[in-house]
Image (cartoon, rainbow over all chains, first blue to last red; front, side, top):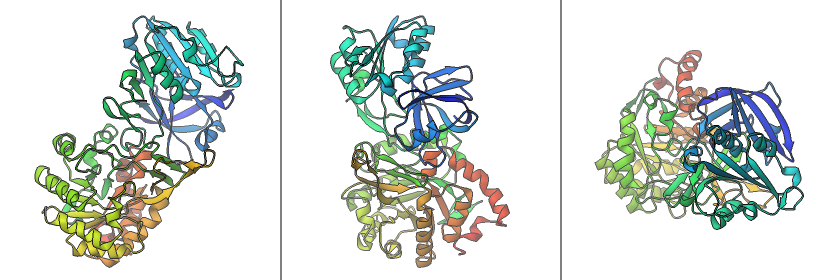
Length: 240
Length: 301
């Protein structure tokens, strides 16, 4: 869906990490889906995962990594943004039984917040393991704890939580998982935890709606567009 | 808004360009395709192709984007058996089948199959893809090679053939003339302009393929100039103008330069409803410019 959204707030929550709340038509938006944001003065829209929905408000959490997100960080409440919403497949939250493990790394954490909220509404037990480089980059812990999720934070340098990476602290056999994060983390999950879960992938996109095939990856089930058949894939389908 | 494109009547001149509308299915989630003048399907080759390694998309400021997709497509069998019937189920208008290849034989084979086994109205033969090696653009940057492909496809089809030309040449008029003399019914131009971006932090090209095709508003003046040159060189040959068109005014401008119809490419990647918005805006712009029939402005400049 295309639409004009109003910025309700836009604030820094960690090192280079911002949380923006937008008001618009939120009906039908599912955990694991993403939005494409038109940035004035740039050509390509920026794909960003949905981190929460509350009534007619949509939250995104983004890291400033280039021109697009730099311009977003400078925006203020009251400004308008042109968004495409409801993009991608989203997580299938029905596949996890009564217990789910959410594994997030860095800016892979945001879609898991909305997933946790929905899983808790479905009455499921949710355990969260998040990894960051260092203390200054940590965010989201409070949101998960508020939802009643048992939450563990790891940092690579040990400046906060447990020193190490997410796969160091996940007990095996692990429950069905939902994961999102950097490629080395995803590879480690497949190698050490296994394929009993779903993984959200990230890729540079052109259109975000399946027409340019710019973001196609090769999976065990053939060529799949991250923006259309994904971004969430069954872990056992991925060739990473 | 009706126009005549080489004896095929289009209800309006707006056509989503090959590679920016897939085989229609995804675009139809955003608007009814039946409002389009025609639709140009994703470039099809003999075999299925994955294309180039990722990343294959790069930003170019507000001016456009690079792509190095490299002709990802399901192959001609799948095109005929699945994509064409699926498109026909949702769209009644003219279909322009875009064809690519890595040898003259492959172009002829794919054209012959699509000629015999589909109801495509026009064959758009891509001799200008900048993102594949030993194919595509190699045929479109030399008049003899362009003519050889044209002759080979002319021999296997009675459908109108539009050769899609590359802007990455010194003299586009000579390539255009060679295609027309070899039997092309029409021309489509321009394909993307070969470009590059470097990630200065990583000191590496942004695209895995290093180079890619530049498209978007930044190429519009180049496309316009080339359409104008080709129209002057081949005044009787219908031209589909393509390159950076992003609003109704650009459609008018492209037609004044010599295009009979206009393809919309990168604009649809920025906004999937771009074609619909342009078609909806056209009558107002025509009125403002005192244009009664679009057919009257083709090549008037």
